[in-house]
Length: 167
Length: 167
Image (tube, rainbow over the protein chains, first blue to last red):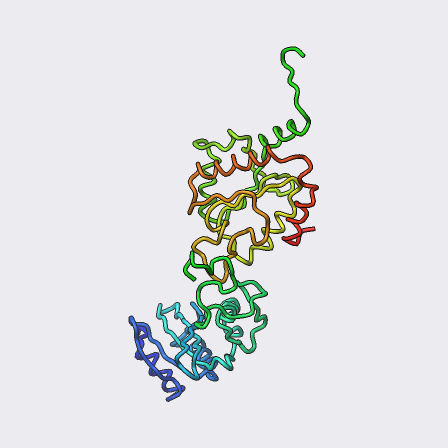
């Protein structure tokens, strides 16, 4: 029997009950939110269960919602069941003042670089990551450029701030 | 003096030899590099100006041609390539990105290579046509031809390099 979104939701609800919220299926992809303390337990459960087998971490990234007070940052896991070709999306919200989320590197090797990238751009502190340093930006950078308080344009430059360039 | 002789001075002979045998070092990172390949190929034929000998080793080169977007992370590498070149050396910034950062007014892109190395000729365009790159090379030839033998030991030149923190 094919693995459907209903079965996945039912299995997760049996295991975690009311902890998982915000169920939805945008464009047919099962999406749900969980508390950040439970992220590894949920991922491990999805990985280990014989009928779920979400053993491929397609993507891991963050989003910044500056108006969402107390839960500004969200870490998003995209998981793939390669046997049944089913994808799901799992979100974990965290306060921007304490952006500590448990690292998934023990479960997925691929999480290593993706968590470094997420740290690089959003400043999410992945607890337990073996080497949480910047990966794409220059090492000297002292801010997290994808957070919304930093405009796209480089604020350190001085040559384009005159009337000719409209800044 | 009879036929086949001419009188000149040593400086002019050296300038003549230098300007017609400029060895370029292509530092191509994006689309301007493609235009440069067209410039070097048979249709536009950079070899007409004595510059057909591309050297991908900085130590044998006279002209550093920077073509394309240089990210801040690549800045130190570009600078190292420049430092490895032997005097006399010239630099040409091909295209909007190398000259000023171009459309990439963002946190990760160097806003013009003249922030890390001195530049002799800027070629505008996004990307510039091969004719424009040829024009830039010919401008370099003019500079080489007019440059005296003592320029590289002058105080002004030392001050220029000093302003980039070189030597």
